[in-house]
Length: 414
Image (cartoon, rainbow, N blue to C red; front, side):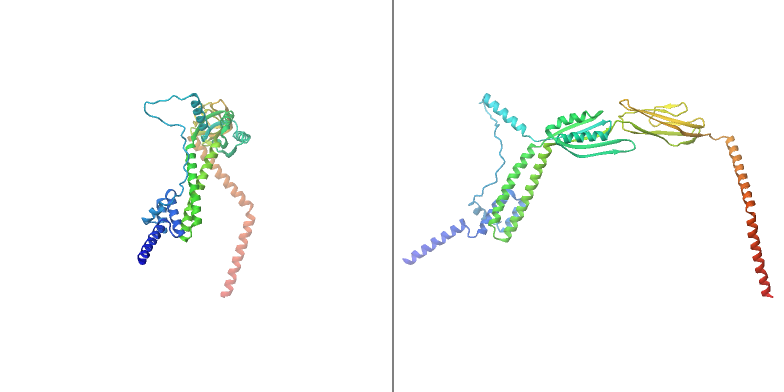
């Protein structure tokens, strides 16, 4: 009898030990393994989760049954507004005035909380670009904004400038109107607005989930005992922290860009500055000469008035002209822009024209060549006459030396 009771008690103890082992694992490392497996679902990618389960030995079917015995709180989801709901069927209801007022208040609050990113691109003509940039900078500083960039470029054909500013969104319209008043002419005006409220809401929800995951991973880290467990959790904790920083950075960028609107102003100068030039300044009669003019500033289109100094005029932008007689000619050009501003440049005796080819020109050239040769020959003889004493002295010395050497040679041979 006593042996029978001992066998029964032993069997009961074994069964109880097995149940306790299945429900409450004996090592804290196993608890850590199960908590990592439970948290891996919503936050880790499939590849990272599979790698983590394999490293911890949790890729066996048995761990899923153990996992069911533990309840780890899930991350909080972003709250969704339930102000509006749809109904179907034949039953309808009429909203009371109080309900209508509450709905209108809710709509106004939602509209006031929306994040709108506004940008503007303005192209305009001003009298002086440097003065306009200074005025825009002062206007920006007076309204608690700041200048992003400003520069002025001058080339042979134009003077341009560009300035980018950020101003408070509440002052956007008034600053745009103030900038427009500085222009002689506004050539383009483009304003765009982007609603980033939905993106900001998504980022907020993502940030909350990531912060919850970070908290849970930190708790798991405290309970981990195995080195491989610590390494695996640390790797996932680092990745989660990076995601949190990126999400915060994006949210901060959206907040700043919606609070400070960007305005880019491209500037052109209205003051006319011109410079005329010709393809050649020296030519013969009937040669075709091209003319052009460099224009800086002004408002296009431009009109042209050319006076070539021989009674001929032109209204072409880049005219060609032939002079029929030799002499010096004064060239004048007058430029008028679209606003009636004029600039005049006059070049006195700018073009020199020589006579063209003729038989008389050939004879004249031959006679001039003969005279030049005779002048050269006469100059040579004069120089020879002046230096003749020196030449004779040199010849005498050379002959004396030669004769002396010849006598010595004869004596030595005798």
